[in-house]
Amino acid sequence: MHDYEFLKYREEGRVGWLTLNRPEKVNALSMKMSDELFRVFVHVRDSTQLHALVITGAGGNFCAGDDLTEMLGWGNANDFMRRARLYQSMANVLEELDKITICAVDGYAVGGGLEITMACDFVIATERARWGMPEVDWGLTPGWGGTTRMARLIGRRMTKEINMLGALHPARRALELNLWNRVVPNDQLDAEVRKLLAVLASKHQQGLRQLKFIINKGVECDLYTAQGFEAISGALVGAINGFWEVPDADKGQGLKAFAAKNDLQQKRRNLARNFWVD
Image (tube, rainbow, N blue to C red; front, side):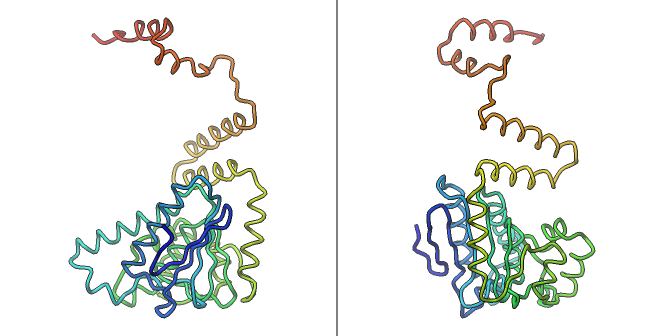
């Protein structure tokens, strides 16, 4: 499972550590590397042991985005669309993980590299980090978050500026725009990540999972629907903290009745089976 050509992956206790490992190409995402990345995300998704995933890059850079040298071989317009949809699925799996995800950014995080950070929960960067969406100068448009997630994070107007101009920005500008969480001295990146992991490890893990879920889902819907997520999460919090009994709840009797085919099952089904079916 942990044998990759362009990635390094290991697990330390409850934390998965993923390193993008094409330093000679500024960790550009080749098709093979992207396929491996998807495999790791699925592995982390399916794990019941992990609580967090940290993503970083080898060689003093995070990620230069898609490997543009491969794009001429992607195929026709439909093939480009299929590849974009694959990358969108990959980013969606990353964003939907029921683990806390942290990007540790050093050097360049541009294009697809920046899009990875936008699908994660926390981003910590070094002072020398640089970021942007330069696709416009290659005659391209972003495919998996550079316009969509970015607009949701920093607004329509700034997303236009970032994408239409294609500039490379200093790390602290990402803080001003609420795109990243923290900028640290160049030699303090790993230490700051581990401090954050220690804080997160001290928390009620089910609470963290629920917070991530309701925040991610709530921001995509109207206020009243989002409040529904909050209310249901509140009920679940009460249940897992021991306050689960509701006097008129079924307490599993419906399922037990189905399995046993007992009087309760017969009563309910006999009353309902033909009700208002004319």
